[in-house]
Length: 181
Image 1 (cartoon, rainbow, N blue to C red):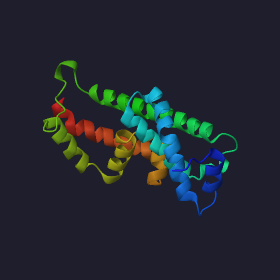
Image 2: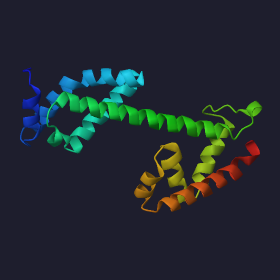
Image 3: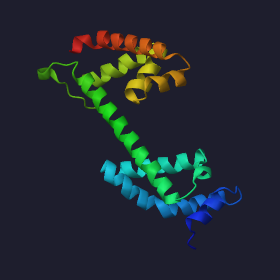
Image 4: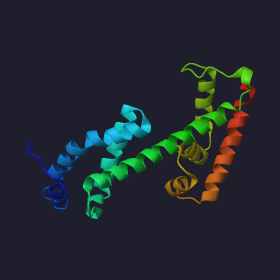
């Protein structure tokens, strides 16, 4: 396989006739170096590879190659760094939400969360019985970790409506699971 320099890759990315081949070369050239950078932030090979794939997808789908003015490698490194930081923030939000959920139980009554646990079965039943709008808001905000603005946009409702749906969903969950606590 012939080596392509960054200028040649960019030139071909901008030409629709050669875009696929150029993107393949770009991926081959930068996947491992970007994964190494992601590993410095995330300390997990699989998670790092996933983040780097997201970088390439965003770079291609949003046609970010049209905005590269100097260093292609530097541009990709910056995208990778930002994606890693976003991933770290999202993980921190998920951990915080899990900890908030665990705080619903007294210290001496922490349940087993295994596949067959009563809590998991009850949670799944509660989730199914929740009002559809509340369930969707609950899923997007609490289970997927999206911010209220994102949830509002996806559901095509106001941010305050999202908050209301989440408040009602939480009230429903507390009532539904109250006998387990």
